[in-house]
Length: 127
Image (cartoon, rainbow, N blue to C red):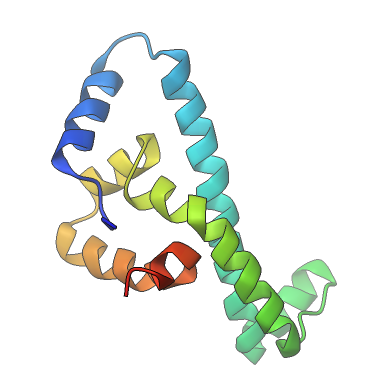
């Protein structure tokens, strides 16, 4: 399983995004990638907020919702399920991944993608 976007995929999205008129497939990919990536990052934030008491208190002040540490297991499962689509949307396929791969230096992106890969069930099977 590749963690980052391969050269062929980069070239394909570069060509599509360079076109003046984006196709429907490009817009759909952009929308789906944004939703999947944002949902996954939100789940990661909630997972961290469950474990770090100061973040848990701030989250409670902002939203009025208390995140007890013992829902960590359920939130880990949800984060991993959402990560099956969120990780590729951010790092390996699609419009969002193209922008991330061309903007963030590989020296920073590679370790980040590999570390976050374990917050998706697909990453557990690539050990």
